[in-house]
Amino acid sequence: MSNTAKLLDLLERSVLVQALSTLACVGVLLFLVATGKPVPDTLSQITWALLGVYLGSKIENAKLSHREMKG
Image 1 (cartoon, helix red, strand yellow):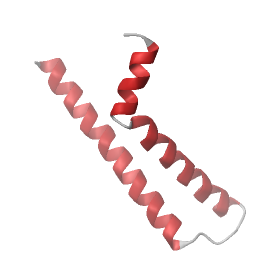
Image 2 (spheres, rainbow, N blue to C red):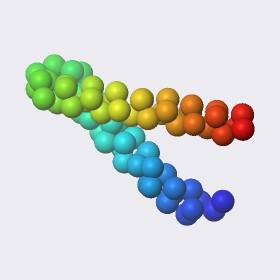
Image 3 (tube, rainbow, N blue to C red):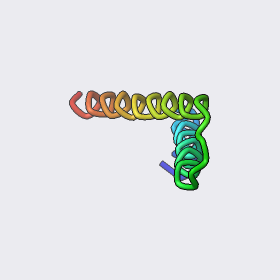
Image 4 (tube, rainbow, N blue to C red):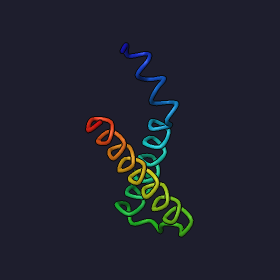
């Protein structure tokens, strides 16, 4: 499978979008905490929600891969 096909497959499953949005929110949250600025509740809630969805999808993908390997 070529790199272009892999990228398109990842975009179809929105793994890249989930990862980038989660990373961006976590980065902003950590920056605000590190600089001592107040973290808005909305940003905190969105970050935790995105983190939960991202990690949940990773677990689900791992389960599916394991089932496919088992046959």
